[in-house]
Image (cartoon, rainbow, N blue to C red; front, side, top):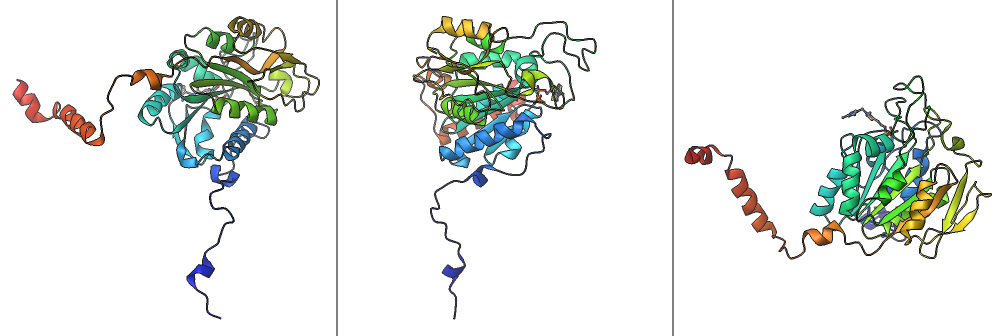
Amino acid sequence: MSLSIEDYIVKEENPCTYSLADYTTETARWCKGCGGHGALGALQRMLRDNQEAPEDVICVSGIGCSSRFPHYLRTYGFHTLHGRALPVSVGVSLARPEKKLLTIMGDGDCFSIGGNHWLHTLRYNINAMVMVLDNEIYALTKKQTSPTSRLGTISNTTPRGSFLEPMNPLSIALGVTNISFIAQTATWLPGHMQATMDRAWKHKGLAFVRILQRCPIFMPGAFSGGNANFPAKFLESPNGIPVDKGILSNAPTVLHDPSDIHAAQSIAANAHKDLEPLGLIYLNTDVPTYNEVRYRNVATPNRATKAKLLEKYMDRYTVGAADSAE
Ligand SMILES: Cc1ncc(C[n+]2csc(CCOP(=O)(O)OP(=O)(O)O)c2C)c(N)n1
């Protein structure tokens, strides 16, 4: 029997369906038990469930264990510099507004060296999902105190215990002009984490998601070790994040209106003292995105005009131009 070329082509049942493999490069090289594995899996499942074309997604990160996401995610990626994921994200968002942007940082990356960028990017309200994997420690560099480390944390930088109370990223984010979305989830709650990412992904504007992350090697005590004893409460609202308690089956559910900034401020301020809130903390869909306001009343130049403008700009630095200026 003679075979035609058609017989050698593997036919997929539905060639337009993306599977998890389409969002995966290699096995992640994080420590055993690291919350990064769960977060990566939840993100890939969320992208798969939304059937996002991998080539439409750009993942930008800083430097740290958590910032290795672009290596493991089969999308466009940019592993930038420590603390600089957000300014790069603003540039990406303005240059390629048609792409879907997700930014991933660690707590040191975002709240410490990148703290100024964090505040301003929240205010810009660019179209992006911004996730911080907060393990309350610098993990990649093997245990230095971070801005969210608890008072008394013993680390390489504070061997006698840290001297300061941790910063509260939820309260700070709530104080920034133009903040439009704040949610919190945890890496040992895969269902809730995926639902949170899905809700954030569908938000127009900047969705700031703090993910409490297990780090069994450098911060095993944080978040009760990331187990069923973690003191948390789930926030429920009609337009919020579906409650999926996972192993926190005994945690209470409370009704919360995320459009009420005073209620959100109270929840955020008491997060460490009371039960840690999980779910949608704040939502304001009326804030314009920077992508909208930046180009309002500005004609976007076409490719040819852009090339001409660039040429004119570069001409300023040619020898001839310098000579003629003298
Ligand atoms: C400008 C600069 N300063 C310091 C470092 C060293 N450094 C690399 S990662 C890191 C901290 C990482 O901690 P975090 O952002 O919390 O991420 P994690 O590793 O815990 O995911 C530091 C200080 C660097 N790479 N660049």
